Length: 515
Image (cartoon, rainbow, N blue to C red):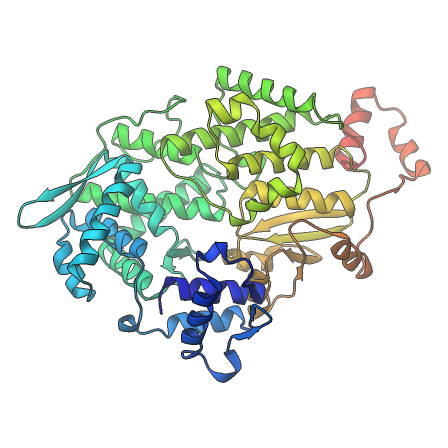
């Protein structure tokens, strides 16, 4: 078994089939995929067998079965990918400082020719991260460069291998393959003595500073803090500033070391928060002017008038602010479902993509442009909304906040709903404390996990279609179109109020009707 075998299995448990007429995602020919399927089937029980049929591979495998298969692979039977081997070297280097790669490759049962090939790719990967590799005579190699960038590179690796429980404690991701388990357990064992110190820091951010971080963001800063405190323990402190496009003072004091504290503040301000009240942002005049101009250009090229200008500006500014900081610190959060955005909203996507500020000055990625598209499209939808909320829903997703917001706004465009909360799959314990009518998700895997934990949910497509809307209408949701407000109920309430009081009342009590 290797990482490609597991990628095929993961795709099959999520989608049910692989169309062999289009295997670009796997970078293999149809014949190569067939041969791998034969090899994979040797590991599977009779009822789990993958079935080739009409140039497709079909499977009824559940996510739970996929996890059981991955966890049952013996370490000696798994062939780690090049990226997994490089990840292990990078993680080892931040903990051991010097890594004897010859000994490591012997331990993994790999040849010296594989080591040489990996060595070239490691040099290239480190260069892209602003780092380099040093040879320590008779000892091995050491990764060098700016301390913060070393930590960031390790955090990008580790964030994929761990989860946080309800008590903010790290544990291994269930779907880790044998090599990922080795890396994660090694890191957890070496850094266990600072785990509580980091937990206290994160809870200070959440409770004392009242900042509600999204789950992926909380996990990222947790791991960055683990690495930082461990490196401090070894005597490594950040002594130089990261070159940033935006500069601002550090409003929060997390650690005594001033430069380390500034870095923590920068990373915190680059992360996602769960609601507008807990947004952390700094006003920077030149950026405000650029964002205002960008919004104005897009507005002038679309039909719908945006009345929620302040809210749109706040969301755009906040996201672009985060993008700039993440770019300066060389990390981002990837969301694979953003790939379809350009195809779903081509005109709006290309309008944003062609903006000089977005593509030339900021050089945002296609994923970031897709997120801006969803933010703008959400506000377009909201400014057309006429319905009134009736069904209270909780959205469960592993996707970005902006993407979840777009999904909720699209649903609100068609149906009379109220979004109670957006949860990550690892935060299902919060359902016990929420008042809601339905749980919604747009992932087969997440739907399976929700049901396995004893909850019921509705699964719809991320880009909702007529079938999804009709299904929801049939089970009791109400359409938001052509709904009215009963005049005889509202007129007595408005009598005697000033114009400003009337406006405030209408916006507060009928947000779907009034802007």
